[in-house]
Length: 260
Ligand code: MG
Picture 1 (tube, rainbow, N blue to C red):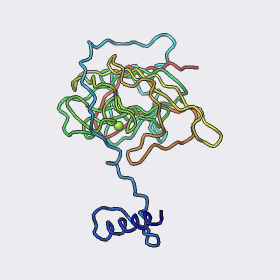
Picture 2 (cartoon, rainbow, N blue to C red; picture 1 turned 135 degrees about the vertical axis):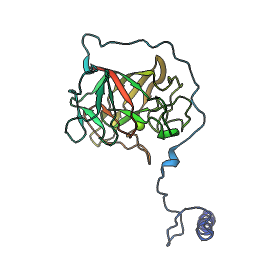
Picture 3 (tube, rainbow, N blue to C red; picture 1 turned 30 degrees about the vertical axis):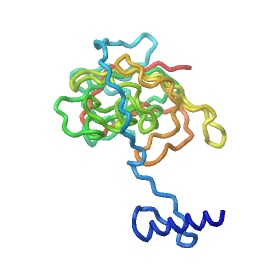
Picture 4 (spheres, rainbow, N blue to C red; picture 1 turned 180 degrees about the vertical axis):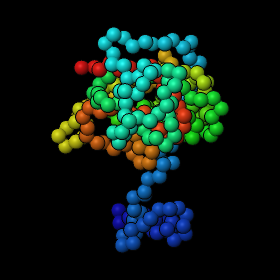
């Protein structure tokens, strides 16, 4: 055992001396220190979700017991994250991200729910990967179902449209062309926490994307971080948050049914 430890220490020290990698070494023991996480460490490009042509768009008007969060006319159900009025543009029955005005959140908080939300990417978007039509739907304010122009736009597989961001790749990619409306139907079960703040029951989510199942009762392991691993953060009911990622993504026909 001692021999192995000495060998490990030597290898770590050698790597540090020759600068072969960025591993930092404890100066006293010679052992490698934990690396700082970088965003690329949680980005895996293969396999890419298979492309599926969705069927014709079918509108889903709100059923009678739904809470309508956006009917195309106003942002009364929404506010900016800091509590001020939501500043996104409402026009032609849709709301659109106004770059730099920040995320918006529902005034009401929710536990478990069924959520219907439609989103559209503008035509002629520039950029690629995460820099093309990025937005997001945050469940209880902290778990992101990614919104991205994933039409002919590869990115790391748990970062495309229909992913649980950096946790679960979508099972298929049925994204419509920019300029056409996409539909998410999201069934979300809120977590239950132990007293120590860990999950007793993990949150789970099912996502139908343009009528195609892309998340099947997927377990959410914690917050959806850009850098680093999911964090478990105890919480109660929370809002739906829509992300301002500085791209002019539009939303419409948003309604929710609470699961009690
Ligand atoms: Mg996003």
